[in-house]
Amino acid sequence: MAEVLLRHRLGQLGVDARVASAGLLRPGQPASAHGVDILRGRGLDLTAHRSRAMSRELLRSADLVLAMAREHVREAVVLEPSLWPRTFTLKELVRRGEAAGPRRPGEPLGDWLTRVGHGRRISDLSGASPDDDVADPYGGPRPAYERMVTEMDSLIDRLVALLFAGAMAPR
Image 1 (tube, rainbow, N blue to C red):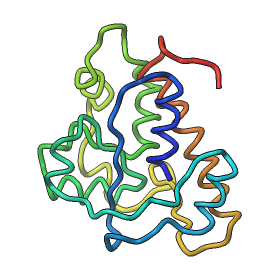
Image 2 (image 1 turned 60 degrees about the vertical axis):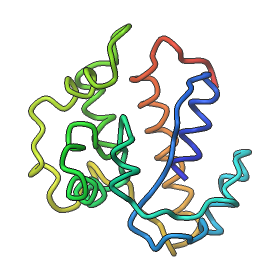
Image 3 (image 1 turned 90 degrees about the horizontal axis):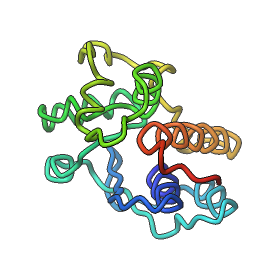
Image 4 (image 1 turned 90 degrees about the vertical axis):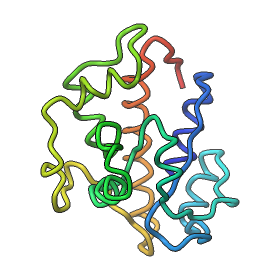
């Protein structure tokens, strides 16, 4: 769902970016019925989505790896340790980005990520935390999915504002 929400938001701004998702679920699984229905209500199509396993090759090609939970960051960094400086949970990156300030005009993404990640330690992401993890409603009731989509939508808006402040357009 985050992939579709982020791709849609970037598309609204005319930002040319490749957005892909991968995780820890068995590959080939369809999106949940609740997720499909909720995004359909927002005019977004999730019906063709199938889960994809996180792989070293996919991760290496990414300029930024966003995870929904600390466990996903840890798994990505175990697969490819060089990813650490550009791998964050969505909540962590938004929180740190708001503290560090948005990307400056002309500032390369990698430089902004270095600035945002200053002082960050892998040990900071041990365990689970509501400060960093978006609650996964998988298999739960529709209201849990609605809360998660609302939270992700807000976080994505905040992230896009940090990354592309000069390109923001009204929704």
